[in-house]
Image (cartoon, rainbow, N blue to C red; front, side, top):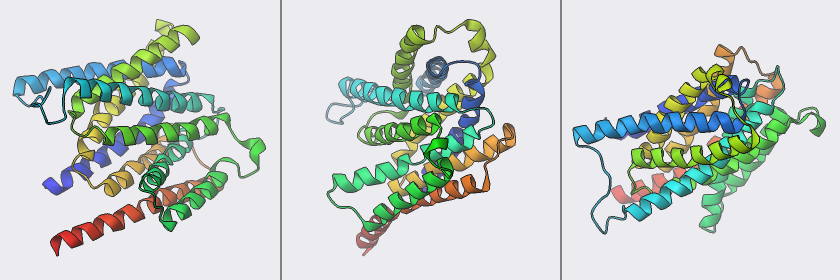
Length: 311
């Protein structure tokens, strides 16, 4: 069962993230992007404070390791601030994009599949960082571009939504978030998750006060979406991601996390009665195929390493 723990946690993460798009769409009708994000981030951080307290009581909390382990207070703060800043950028761009979609648009599913492109971006980064790019990755990029065309601009650029542009840019921020997390695997996942939420939420709060001037009544009207996004997506899912990435093959992790787009579309259809046109659905299929293709080189490389190790 130990070998399946990471993948199972990541599948749950993808489901929680996917249905969070529904909460973001519903909450965006009541409050601005900065207000929604600082509210959900602080709810998530509060939830994780309770988790950390429980871990202390049960003796499984891991504040800092012995010298030489790489997990020091300084490393922890650098990790939290780095992850928090990048998370703020990604979350703001995504929520602003969702908020800007016109009524009648399948905002949940549409934004979910566009956001999933961060997996292709991560694969591209990995290939270029190692100064070698597998042809399949280039094929994935081409498939992704074609998929984005069918999903966002089947009738020309005149029909491109501003929300599509913002969510597409957010995919780059979330790709950076994955890369940053991967550099701090020695840091305790739960504590890192709480700190990054506090950093992200604090920045969003300052921006909300400057640009949105939120009213308590507005936040109360979006309470259910905020609570779901804060507890399930921020509090639980981001923590599961950090924990599961430590024990899961990177390719498997990427594929499982990309399924959030499928859950986003499913949630939008089931809960908000959203529906994509046949052309948009075809674009979604191509985007998901591109995400899967982008993982093939790393999958083959990992399989070869395992075979050599066994041999």
